[in-house]
Length: 272
Image (cartoon, rainbow, N blue to C red; front, side, top):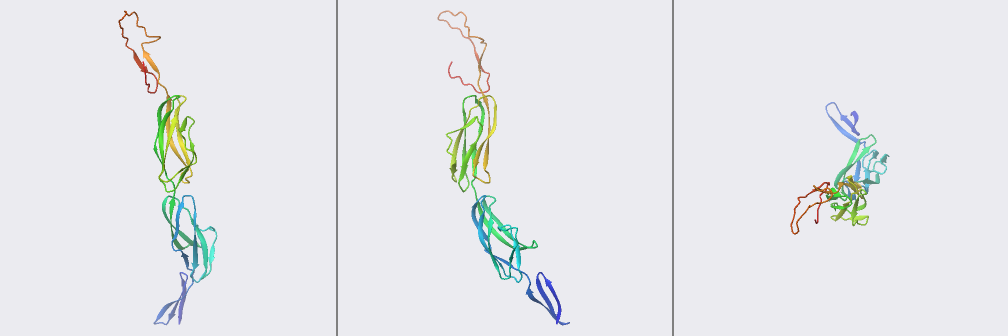
C-alpha cells in the first residue's frame, strides 16, 4: 500500500507498506548528471599572454536535461543544454598568469548558479626573465669628457627574450650598441657599456629603459644618476706670476706654492 511520495534532491522517493511494516523505494533519478572527459585537462606549456585550447566532451548520464555554462568556454555567457544520454563536444581555453606550474579548475555551473561538476586543470607558464647586474651611478663626471659604466643583462627564463629598443637620456650613449632587435636566448648574457658626457653641471636623474617582448614586463628601468663637474686649479699666493726677486748666479731661491683644486671633481696633474 502506498503510504507517501516525495521528491528529495531531485530523486523521487516512495514509502509503501502497512501499519506494521514499511519500506522506502526510489522510483527514478529525476535529475541530470554531468560527466566530463578528460577528467583532468592538461594544457601543457604555454607562453605568458598566450591562451591554449583543448578538446573536451561533456555527457549527461542523468534522466533530466542539464543546462551549463563555464568561463572557460568560448560561449561563456550562453547556456548549453544537454539532453539525457546526450553529449556535447567543445573546446576549453586557459592562459597562464605566471611562470611555472599553474594548477586550477574548470567549474561547470548550472542554470541556477549551482556547481554541477569541477574539472581539475594543469599547465606550465613559460616566460623570459631579465636579470640586470651592475649599476649606472656615474658620480661626478668631467664636463665634456665621457665617463663609462657597464651593466650585464641575463635571461634566466626558459624562452627567448627579444630586446626591441633602448630608451635613454640625450647625455648618455651606448658604446658599441648591439643591432636591434636582439634575441637573448635562455641563459645568455649581454654586456652593455654606457657613457655619460655631461655638457654642464646639471644633475643626471633618469633611467635607462630596456623595451622587450615580455608580456608580463615589457619595459625594465635601470636608474641613472650623475652630475657634471670640472677640476679648477689655483695657486695660493700667486696673483699674476711667480716672482723670485734677485737671485745670484748659480744660486737658488725656493718659494712655497700651494696648489688647490677649487673644482668639484678630482684633478690630476700630469706634469709641472
